[in-house]
Image 1 (tube, helix red, strand yellow):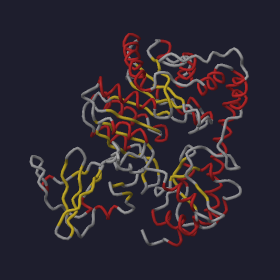
Image 2 (cartoon, rainbow, N blue to C red):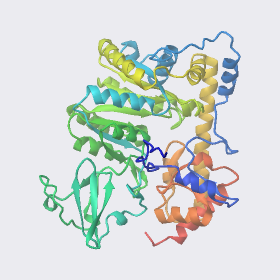
Image 3 (tube, rainbow, N blue to C red):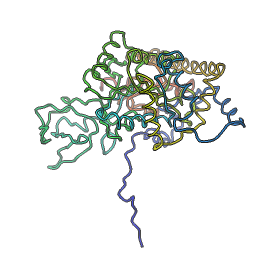
Image 4 (cartoon, rainbow, N blue to C red):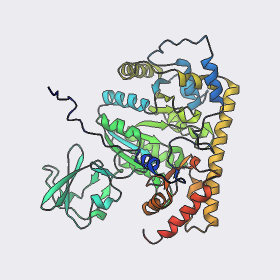
Length: 488
């Protein structure tokens, strides 16, 4: 007798990422190159690991005094304390005043999962999340990835949009309507729709629309908030026309955002806000009581200076803001397989802090109960030993200097090749992952003609470029730019 499965109606989930790597692995070309690895690479193409980490792994493995009992719900106390001092500085006022604390979390997204759960329960009026980071997304519809926005918004075909939980795009075709989920907010001209009845009316061609924020969340934590029922709107600092980070994006979003919403901000230090821009931003955030949730995923990897990379937090501390931070430490130590981090809480006083931490610990019991220890032990051992900490800082500084050198070499080789355009934007950006500033046609040329794999937004991992492949990559970029010139 055949038994029907309870999973019979469960479809395959839409895969949001990984298809580029899959295509790369299936490519039989011996000279193929992948420029989109998440982790920093060595010159030999292996994941970068701080030189001090293997020593600590060995020492921990051979330590007979270690207790392998479960950690408390809030995690390893010494790890949390060391991480907070790294983030803010040992003598920062929030540490001195005992109004900052943290919960040991699991993986790169654990802090966002925990923080989002807390905000859903205790900040019920804050149900709109604005994600502002340096990443630029790509359009995605329910049927799959769309390379060209005109496929969703053809200029010659009338269609209509109405709003439900998500926007649904109805495309008139052969007398019927094919519906596609449109997972980003669309600003619809008021004259074209009835907000009371959501009646379907014909709208102007694509150029008259404004896509607000972008698309399906580019940042993985965007999916965390989205799945939890928050309305997610995503913006990028990166201006693909001017080829630079635009601080005005953050200022404009803050000005237009509703009262009491949530801002999740990543890579804000890349924007280089002026003193007047900081003042304007603070005024907007305070007047609208916007709650801040910072993504600190690679402290030290942006400029090579640990304090400089998180110095912006002092602006918010000094102005009396309360906020969350997701502090992930895996990348800066090179222990990617030991995803470890902290949900950092900054409150107005110690009494409020203890209340928040107690509720967070209650939530962790349902999420993971006890965090793993190995990654936390490695990091704590390094941060609590001055000699080891200095060795780690030097290895981190060496990595950043190598990234800067690679960018300089790429820019100079493109200049010597006579590649059209300015390439200063390559060295103007901080961090391992930066934009090449190529358009979709140029990226497609590199992938199909040269077997060089990179995302459509041309944001690559510069540590994937080394002495063995830099000439081929820069020559290929030059060819791609020349072959597509005038096709924009």
